[in-house]
Amino acid sequence: MSAESIRLLKQCARAELRGQLAAMDTTARCAASASIAEQIAATGAWKRATCALLYRAFADEPDLQSLAADALARGVMLAMPRVEADGRMLFRQVNSLQTDAWEVDACGVRSPRGVEVDAAKFDFIAVPGVGFATDGARLGRGKGYYDRMLETLAPEVITVGIAFACQIRNRLPLEPHDARVQWIATEDGVFKSATQ
Image (cartoon, rainbow, N blue to C red):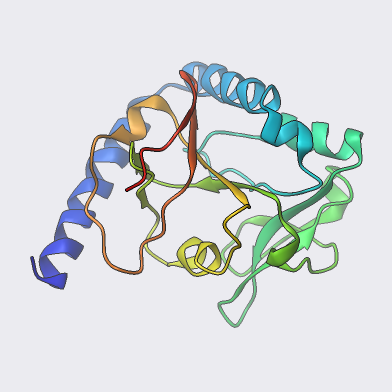
């Protein structure tokens, strides 16, 4: 299959998945987000984490703020992504969830003001996506930020795709640069991906 055909399939998959996300009402989204965070918090991988990368959720993504609060309460080094004016995604330490510890980044997302954290320090990474497949394939928003970061990680780093159950598919179209995650967490549970 040509690269152009795969890109078109990815566009179609994104459109379908975004439609399903848009159909979720706020109450269902909040309940599912709480369930996802609770299930992740109960895993050994989260309890053992010493340096975790979470994310600040867009309106259509699972919200992990309760996990962020848990990390800070337990003394886990916590970081979140920040897109710089030059287009690079860096990771900044989160020292507080208070509003004054955050500012808007180049993509219009509220991001931490903390010092930069090297991705090599992470032992737990929550990975957002438009959709995931049961084999760990991820369909992102199309900028490649997470794909570039994930390909640099040591194999022992725990990567968890975070999604609502309606975002999980048996298969997704992939290009050679598309990265996979080791685990997937939805409101229905946390499961190991069936990687090749």
